[in-house]
Length: 418
Image (cartoon, rainbow, N blue to C red; front, side, top):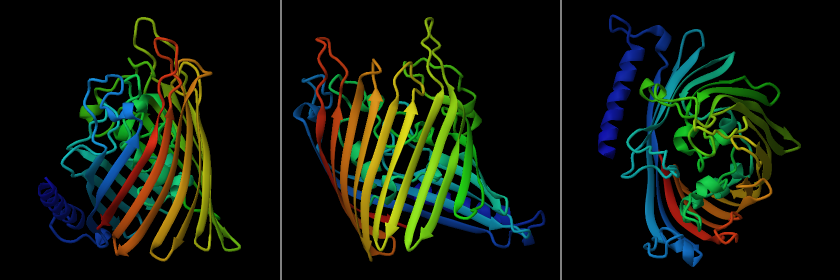
């Protein structure tokens, strides 16, 4: 499969060069003399082990007759990227970006049943930039992802609290339902949440704009017509404005954005961001619909760095977005150190996600310690240990809380970026 993708990418590259660089008569156009096409990608080979409660070692914790999960595995994550960058005579920058998943299975980002991303591009985007700023359009991440600042911004190895550990613990609760549907598994605003909404939704079709930097400040905004719409008209034409799911996912008519700051004060590097999202919730299409609150969410975070040391944190809330009642909240904190090719970090994440009643919230906690070492240009070796606890406060048939899963995930691997 990888060989086919490489051949296809090479053909696309050759076509792109001729299409952009050649005029109607086949001659080079002076306005596209600086066009550059870059083929790249990344490969990550990882050895992992997940230690968790005995009940959660089963493929389905609610059924003791089910088989036991593999707790140890060797896995890989591979992608190919194609970048096109050009500059017109007037100074207008333009180009495109394509990211293809090229593993022998679906990508690790597919935590939800509605998120089958195998065999398709993960991201496609075109851009233009100049003195006016930068405009992006396509199935790509938006302003709140690009401008985000939190503890995971300084995490090493796989990304600490926003890294790979969440793919290793059992994806089901003691009741047999989805962890992603009952917990907030990553410190993100709704349109960026990999667990509940999946990688397709994160890359929903959108328009984004970023201002030029001004005294360290940058403003950005994105418009997303519908989180279920991505790719071609084949998908967009099948999207409806209502929902048949209990949690009214996802949202439509979304505006997101905010402000980010980067500066230096007495050798201390400072980064900060204040971000928010607003939009309409898709209401039930059932005969007796339940009202769900509109999208109203925000997040703020910071990073400080001085002589190799770095510190960061964030706080965010989904308010009652998409729910009948109850608010989702989360916060992060972390520290890191870098010396030459060596890096280390310790990051913490805590989230509270409402369930049946607003006074009951499922709690997820992660504490992640990561190390990495730059072996050579583009080559990074890493090790990471992440402790986790998923405290399930929902009630069983006897009105008792379900069993809580907790344990640790140990990962070691090597990344190659080219």
